[in-house]
Length: 329
Length: 145
Image (tube, rainbow over all chains, first blue to last red; front, side, top):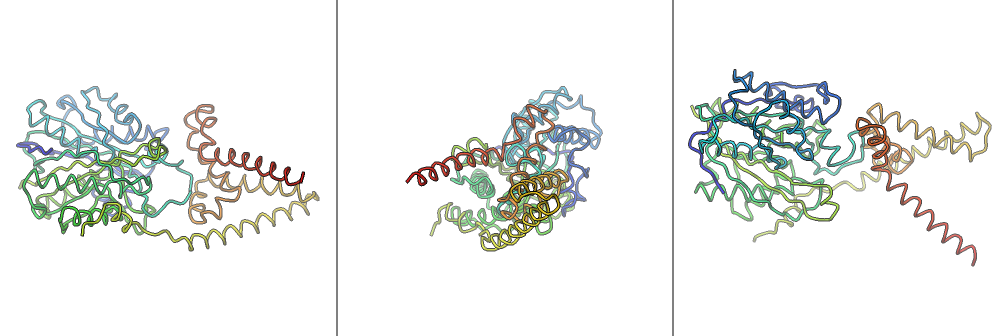
């Protein structure tokens, strides 16, 4: 299902990160970088709530806007019952649509926000998302201080809070269209190989997007997948060619871009809902405004993983939502 | 020819260096053994106690050091490097228990530490007890014959 938007713009963005992201190659593109994973809070869950509130406050400050002029918030995170988002929203007192789509939450938020604005229901929407490495590790994997070895395909959950202001008011980044993906079963059951879980969903959604819009892959100056990591990227490239006969030229993965994979302890790269929007809002938008890219397809992928279902020996479902972003000169 | 998704995944999954990991575990695990033996001999001669009691002192020392180093935040890097060299000895059990205790400390003494401390290492205790029972049973039966 692809929506084409007439007038939806990303007017402003805010990106808040933790120490690993700021030490990575894109560190200088983020608005605020913290050195400590607690962000002055008592525990990692509250730290993630802090990230969201700080991202929203930074966004309002950057766009010189008061919170009263925002109609609604759309957002989600990785924690059970999307608690970080719900608790962050308790401090805001505004209409809130909570969404869960794992690491593809950001693009789903952009599409839903875009549809509500383009349909004339809302004027200004803030779409946000967050992830926190230690809070996610605790919930999905092992205690943070546990050092058991992990396979090379493991991805490292990024720490970040990201928010974007969407409205009809013309800005320089336009959301041109968006494709909502299906939930895909890749048959992969390995929790340490999320790239393989999600690559199929990315390929399926991008193929559908191209079919719905009648475009060739060369229409885009850059195709970005969410967070497939080093090995997921290879699987994605090969599957696109083998299944859909699409050869990718200008292609990259935000999971590979966020960290210095050689020198940081991140295994196959970054993951987490914050990964794709951190790279896109921080780095890619900067390059788009400077004219390096005009049309970008961002396909954020999410592994909808639950440790309980993995213990039931079921394959991990995944999804991918894609947005077409254009720079208006 | 079209390949199935599973084939593509299999082809693009990196191989873990089993021999390299085993070699590291062999060397570091061996060094742990040397350290353990040194501690036993040291306690036996310093405190003038039998080897059986000195062994208990050695175990307590290793458990204490693993927990201390885990709390200080660098033992996970050692375990990650040494792999089974530090996981199989008692150091691995202590590390797993301590890291879970640290993780859940903020959720309260009973609901946090009490209920979650053995999250990773509980399986070791259960299957340790079960296997000792089975082996004692076999030994008893063999002894009767």
